[in-house]
Length: 298
Image (cartoon, rainbow, N blue to C red):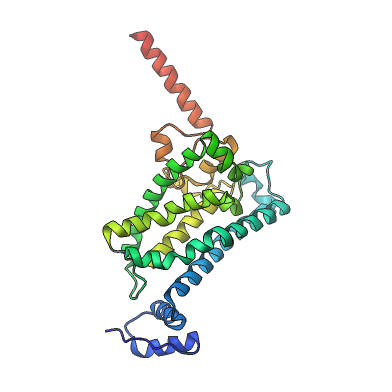
């Protein structure tokens, strides 16, 4: 049975106190419990942890792509090889993304813990099993991809595109940092899918830990940044998982300004015939020719 922890003057003091009486917890679980114990304010503890995690992951994952853009050897893998982001574009994009994070995302993150409590997300220890986390995250990927497809497609409707989504299409050749370069309204609406799908899942299923939510958001950030990287490698994931979208799928969307609306997977675009690019155009021409021949035969 877990002993009630006592807050200490320092974080590591709380960690040592917890370690004495909760030997059944692993090291990560002790660190987690020590953080909430030391802070003595769950809203503040979750808010700080969530915001710091988002910033570290977003800019930490974008950094390798900034370095790749600076190394000429990688140009052979650049999808739009004549469009390399300048240092000014990288800095300008980073500044606007940071502004959006502090003005749009930070207030939402601050309300995250009360939202978790209201819908029954667990913030306690022990953590869920890796199996539980894995299948729940897989469900979130499918749910969010559906939300993203329909909202993103709607964003390309005239007035919504002109007043909201056009900002994201400022760069016809995207790069990693540009994943969240968007209107505050778009950040809010598309972010609702990232956070809202797990919340809805918890409301129905009733078993979700905030750690699983964090792992999901980290993976979703990786996916979004990599999809905007502008690079197609022989080892890119979609070569091994054909239904995975990846950079090649999304880069065409930025280049053509239409089609390829999905975030993580390709199936919605395939089923609803909204794929963009040369191969998709070729398939449409072949279908039209086949349909015309069938009419003649009749």
